[in-house]
Image 1 (tube, one colour):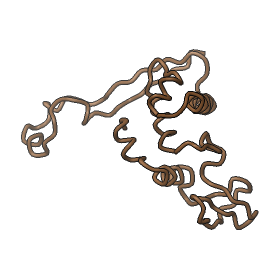
Image 2 (cartoon, rainbow, N blue to C red; image 1 turned 90 degrees about the vertical axis):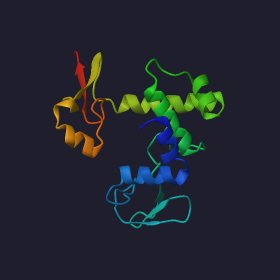
Image 3 (cartoon, rainbow, N blue to C red; image 1 turned 30 degrees about the horizontal axis):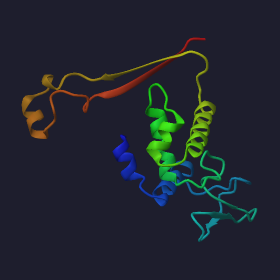
Image 4 (cartoon, rainbow, N blue to C red; image 1 turned 120 degrees about the vertical axis):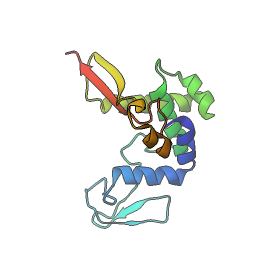
Length: 168
């Protein structure tokens, strides 16, 4: 997904909330406090009320988005920009891209980097490489290629493969 697709798909707060709910709770909301799967939706900004412990919670609880006043589309864009920058991105550059002040950009960057570090499965020095697997389309029948309008060259028909190796 590129930046244009990201900004069109996650253009407002409710689209981001729906995506996070589907990602975090594929089988329905689960209470963050007691783990109960029975809840009812409250009319306030996508919050749920647990029917067991009677506490309210949202999908943002326990994530980097918790207690933020910045819009979620800004957070999604920041995650993309930080993950996409090969040599890192400064908080000043991030604040220019997101149109927020430098302190907010620094806080977002700090939270996102901490989350990326906590979710890391590899430690120490890690080697990383990518490639695409699949033969040339010119080896296929010419009629099949012309019928399906499949390009002969490029990476569209190939499978991307990512390899990681932890040295220690």
